[in-house]
Image (cartoon, rainbow, N blue to C red; front, top):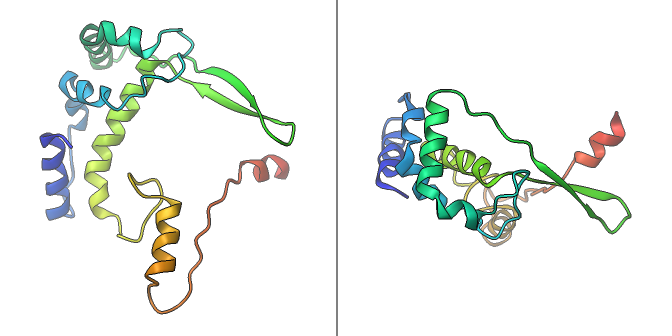
Length: 166
């Protein structure tokens, strides 16, 4: 975690009621360069047909251009390329492939918010957290039971259910 994020994480941990301001300013070129390391370089290209390897050849200029467009509020999200993958039951699963540029901003925002809000999460909270998930929740519940009683861990995808309900 970059030093700037560590500082925000420490402040969030020490001052529970602190209200962070001007987070937008932290999404600068240096921070986005650091986030670039976590972009999947082997992912399929989006609607613009630019791969991560091609984008990386002009990375400094691309990130500078993106930051300038965001500062001037002229950045618009690109369409997501849709591809359908067949499932075992004969239906198809939609898969969205965003442009490489479109993955960098959400990653940077997620890292920033994660550094701040991760301090408030309980140790027993496993949903949508880095390096933890359903397997760690099951492991914790089966190896070190809490409160002296059984608990349930449920992982569910209700998308199909909601489609049928309408």
